Image (cartoon, rainbow, N blue to C red; front, side, top):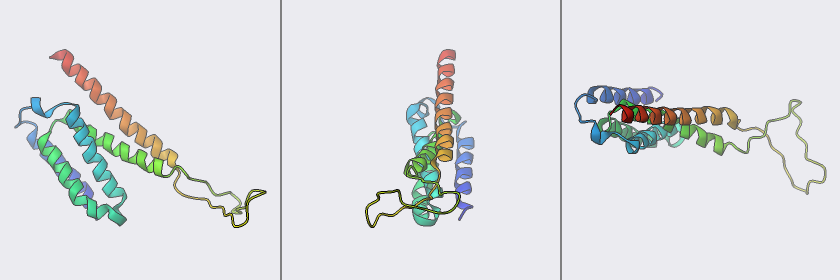
Length: 157
């Protein structure tokens, strides 16, 4: 199962590599295609992270979206949106893990004084900070890079 995800991404890279010379670039450039690449990156990443639950059910649609975008917009500049989509999904994981509570070092959980009867306490979960930091970087850097490449391209044209 783990081999399917890199195989799909590699197939998309081959489609981009072969298709970037054969199509006219003007209709396949712009923020719209950057967003399409980001959606494909988010779908593939979500499918990978949810691999043991609904991920395999989502994989065919995510792979189809990725291959369609790779065929329709083979520009390397716009393909940086794929990384932004990965980052967006990582930030979604951070958001869903926002109720993380680390367990105490001594391993003893206790209720605060004055807790109502039947109250409970729990700890654990996934620390959202690594997901948030990496997701933020993987979202912002491609956005800034693509905007800079567009500005350079527009200035040279």
